[in-house]
Image (cartoon, rainbow, N blue to C red; front, side, top):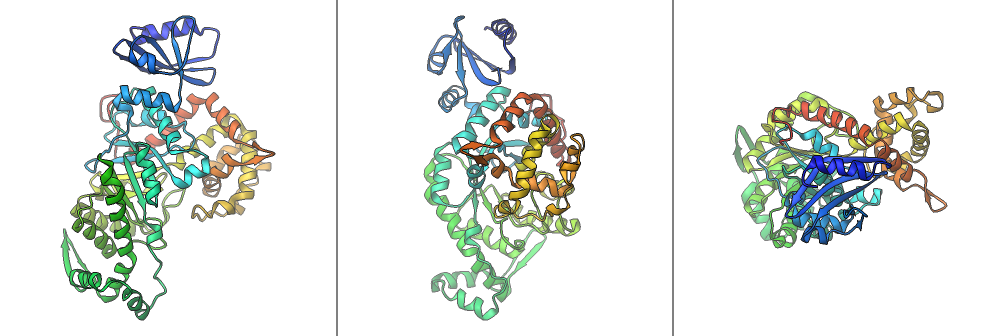
Length: 501
């Protein structure tokens, strides 16, 4: 197989009596070994021809024609990583826009890469939170395996990140780093204690539990001190000061501890993001300033921070809130982030179409935005189209288990307003994915559906995967269109030569 055309011709003849798809962009030559990825009867393989170290190391079965069929295993992924550096995730830094493209099923990353062609934005392709992996039954290695093979399949050499997303503990961070992840998103929810109902006396009492030396330092640095930040003037009065110290002192301590104990010893560049977004109330400007300045003083570099924004960034639907207020909020917080040398990050950023122009405007096109569940919803659309009976079963089960799923995700869906699907034709089922309540119902119950079992057998998992694999190209087309719509509205039109990112 000296060329891609020859490889396609050879394989078409070799497997002429079997269902075959050849991924033409995957053709690679390394020394004396030629490789190309195929889909044979619904299973993917890398076909290797030739000789040399790569050919010998890849695990697989030899065909009668002298080719090796190598399955997409973890072991083979690690071998590819050693021979093709561009299949390994890397830190992307803070000087460009990046988009997180989470893939709950492990089937979407190739289409995610296709959607990026010709656009000036970098992808974080591996992005699964600990919560999502628990719900889907996947591991850090599973997620990265699927992404690396998708990168190889598409011959994508533009660089991609892998995000250990919403991690909370040292053990979780170390596991992600050990697996090769290039980005860590530290979820600081556990460090932020609710203070909304505390009066001034209670605040003062809680504040006095801090060491005197620490209190003296904070008072001299922040209490009634005014700091110019671009066009802003940041000032903390006594109550604001007490609230920010009590809320964010534990955050800063945790961020520093993880950096010193985990990221520094890793000995490689890591994109470090701080997540404050899963709190009950928006992050104040002074609170953001306190965290940012403390990290700067402690020499802890971060690439992005995700505050809790005004309004609601709920799963699967557009922004809920006053867009003018959101615009003012992003403008101020973007100015803070720029002053301290990192970007704003936007979580649950998929489908927030009304906010994208605002985000691009005030960040100057440099931000990080995370998507994940929207690709699952596109998969569900394909299922509705080609296997409506499967969707009906999923819908009924999700409806019964919806309130269980709300313990994981905060949404305002009213499922009593969803049309009774027993009264809908198969054709009319498609309209459900345009209904915000039905979208959120299916969005947040993904893990329950994938894990559902009866008598030791999965109720939906195998049929979901079988359906999507059989209609792989339909799913890819839907994703390229949908993610492309996100990128267009975010300001990343296809203005580069085809294939460049």
